[in-house]
Length: 50
Image (cartoon, rainbow, N blue to C red; front, side):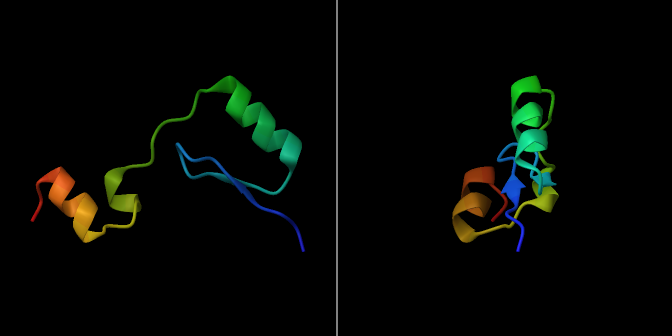
């Protein structure tokens, strides 16, 4: 079973550690759109979308 490495900023997943490290070094990724992130009551309140 392969390990999966996920970028905390853009949520892209990598199975190759070297690819993940290079992605992190470049720092060119963007935050994932809000609609792609799971919504919890806490994040909804923080975003003012109650």
